[in-house]
Length: 107
Image (cartoon, rainbow, N blue to C red; front, side, top):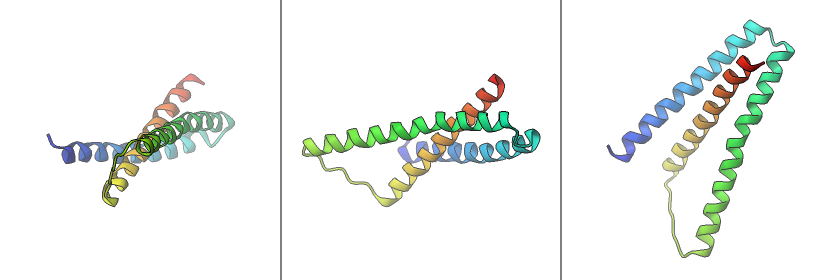
């Protein structure tokens, strides 16, 4: 399997997870009528999903440090950067979805 097929599979998975997250959240907001418990569950899930942002910042810092001290030239096309951004958003939404489901059962 070449890299484009793998990226396509991940992009489809990220899109499905993102759509499912928004539909599931809307359904739960109607079901719980935005009570305090649901708001607390959402806050905890968002805090958990923000750890993915911290991981991205660390990876960018490490990558920048490596390219700073080594004579390495890395080029990305704009299309590839957009694909990675979409995959990152899908990963973050997956983390938020699983956190919401976990904290919804927990609390």
